[in-house]
Length: 380
Figure: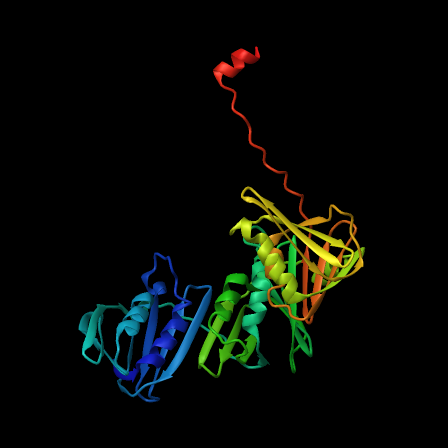
């Protein structure tokens, strides 16, 4: 195998592909990138998989001699990053030694034979749907997926209709849903594991167009812009009905507020919680929304003007602050906040909906004075 390639183009493809390589594994080939040089079509294909997701990228390259080999994904990306030349030359020597050179610098690294790389068996894309905004959909839903327990709830659910795609993330206490317009999509639904959906979002641009298809076992996303194919195994099982959850919030208290102003106030209020999961006390009063966060570090308060339609009791309701901030992080313009008599929270803005069940107001920690032997004797 021998070829040359534009270094920056190869580096970009290697970085995308490396996202599918396993970070920890006992199978060395799963931590690598399969390089396949095609002398007939003058192109190089990079492939990686951790057996849950797979990514392949193709770049144009004047291939002198075809062949294939598996190189460590992290090492390959680091080498291409450190080299400074415009063009990189790569040649496979006997005993699977790969020479990577550019300008005046070069490396000779040990690799694995291509036979050790697992077969990807990606389904052909026959009936495809064009969609965009995957990055935003992931940002709006992945955080809400369950981190453990029920396997279906550790997925992001994609619901397809004839004219729209709705993505849903839910862990039982929090639900976030967002909708995008589609053309020609057949009705149906599928479960994509949240880590896979996050990895896909990290591989594409904000509004990059993708061609999507599924065979019922895998979902395949193809980017014409990057000549990249991303495949993931699908989850299975029963998922919570989002419409039942969202429609179950019976309006008792209501307010309208600007999304960015509410987000800023919320961000300021949870500062004392650090990266923890402190609760925010939310209260609707006349013309005002008040936020309070009590932690072991102290108390933070903020308030902002709002069109309050129905005021709350002064004790309000408590919600997990970080989840609440994540739920509104991409909302813009006016948003409607509805709270039921039981404290069920529903925030709607544009094509987004966010639900959260209330938590119990944390009990303030009080310092306990230690009783010494001397004080105990005195007390007796």
